[in-house]
Image (tube, rainbow over all chains, first blue to last red; front, side, top):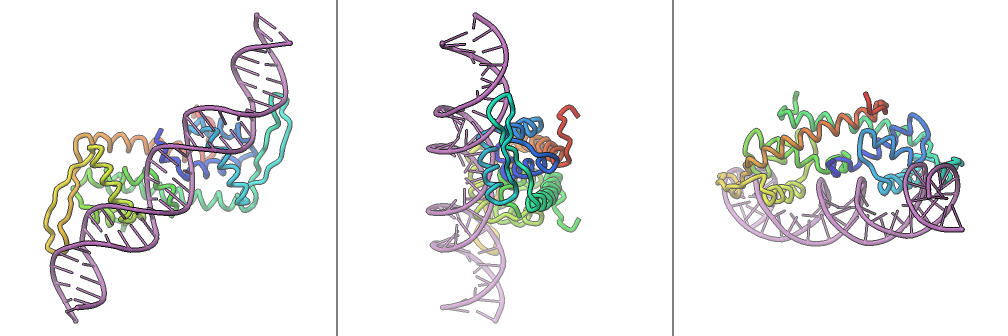
Length: 108
Length: 108
DNA sequence: GTAGGTATCTTGTAATGCAAGATACTGTGT
DNA sequence: ACACAGTATCTTGCATTACAAGATACCTAC
């Protein structure tokens, strides 16, 4: 899978999954991996950034099958960001598709 | 416009435009800019890379209104790459859309 | 001659994903 | 007791790519 395609997109994917339910990091890797390859070395720095930017808060929870899980929950700001990024992605993907299909006239 | 989204995508855009007609660098910037912001500092290194990788060949042509233009033409290898990258992009975009919409079950 | 549009190219910086590894808890098998 | 696999978190260093800013140069018009 083309690594470069993922730049910036994984952030929306994480926000989109968190918009549906709180998740811990390892769980996010598994959820997103159903559709897109993602590794742990990617998710943890990303989650730290999202927290630093105020888009998520965290809380710990015992699991019984391993070390405690750190759950991530979207803040209001995070929900807003999720909407904006989703819109931006949709617009971007449409623009790319138009270019790939050969509709080079921006008027259309 | 989100810079990160473009990573890797501009390469397909350039190949897709070149699949329709030979272009010179400045022209490619204008064509692609109708849909997606792109700057000259991005296109020239990208074109050099495509040439180094054997996806395009170049030829010079006088213009009458400025310095000579360096046209880029797709090679067979470039056409093949264009198809493969396009397929890969389509698959990737579908995967992202599915995640954003919340269809987290990969079976569907 | 100087300003602006056309055209190419280089340098340094920023952002992000990944491989690889470190750490640690739990349960299973030997 | 011991080793191993699965669960779970985190860090470091590297590779890739886009961009701003600038250098260069040609042509036309004022």
